[in-house]
Amino acid sequence: MSGEKKLLPQPTPETEHFWVGTKNNELLLQKCGSCSSVYFPPQPFCPDCTSSDVNIIPASGKATLYSYCISHVSIPGFEAPYSIAVVQLDEGPRMMTNVVGCPQTPEALILDMPLVVIYEKQNEEITLPLFQPAEVEA
Image 1 (cartoon, rainbow, N blue to C red):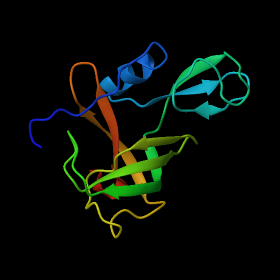
Image 2: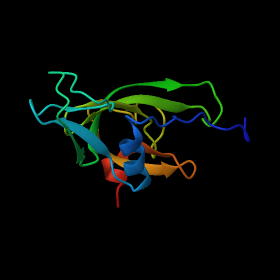
Image 3: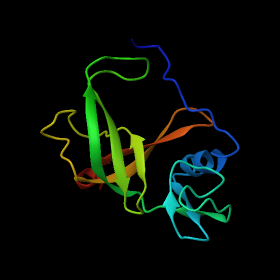
Image 4: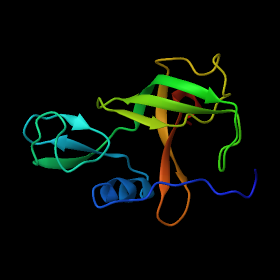
């Protein structure tokens, strides 16, 4: 499977700020100015109260492992085994991502384990936010 390219997200006007942030090694979320809800994925209105009074805020980059599955099937850009994970950001929202920097086994991927964001540049436009166990951070 080497040489095959990973399918990458396509930025839209609603997500452009998020991808600009990851390119600058910053995880950006949105916060409602009306009800203070912090949410992800990006959208032009609050999913809780539908207000369009939306602000962009930097996230801490800290999370915990909420759920995951381990894929044992390689696909372009992902050599098996790899995790497909949902992380709970410290700010509240959940995000689908990959956990890296540890064995891709149930013994290593412990629910509620502390994680930190890292950034993996894919091309000039897309840098992916991935998460690794917090104890790996130096």
